[in-house]
Amino acid sequence: MPPLKAYQFKITLLDIDPPIWRRIQVSDRYTLFDLHVAIQSAMGWNDRHLHMFRFDSIGGRIIEVGIPDEFSPSRIPGWAVDASTFFRELGDRAKYEYDFGDGWVHEVVLEEIVPREPKTKYPRCIAGARACPPEDCGGVPGYENLLRVLADVHDPEHQDMILWLARPFDPDAFDPAAVRFGNPNLRLKRWQSAT
Image 1 (spheres, rainbow, N blue to C red):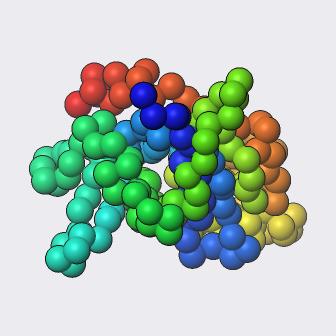
Image 2 (cartoon, rainbow, N blue to C red):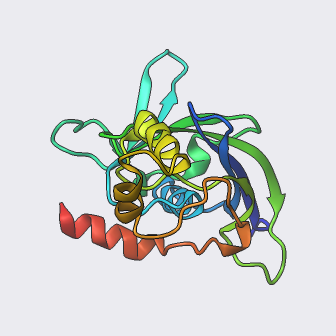
């Protein structure tokens, strides 16, 4: 049996400056659905919306992997594809889209393939920057508006936005040690029972 390895990915949420990003390590035996769950946990999303990975094929065709639905029956189920099928070499990348309404697009890059460390639990988040935007805030434009309103205590929407958030929100805060990863098997059962 070959030695166990960990795949190290950098996930960057696109179109936001300064960048919001995470660096995670996952098992080399992960499916793309497992990787999706790890990204959700590391970013701080709640996995309440559909997602997909988009890969460019050699022939220029786009391959979509995620949760098939009536609008995208050709989308490949993520639980049926090993992440190593598409992430083979360092620098391999994909677009990961979450919440098609808000349209959060991330770049996922395979940075390293390393031996798994003994007595270390995977997945794990080893670095990152800035808090994840709150769910359902309206994509990049909505998030930029949220930050503008929160920064201006005199804005007429300021108090409503604080009530909507229902918790303190510091856009610059992120602690990799605070990330708690969801269980892909339980998450898959939830998705399959909902469809």
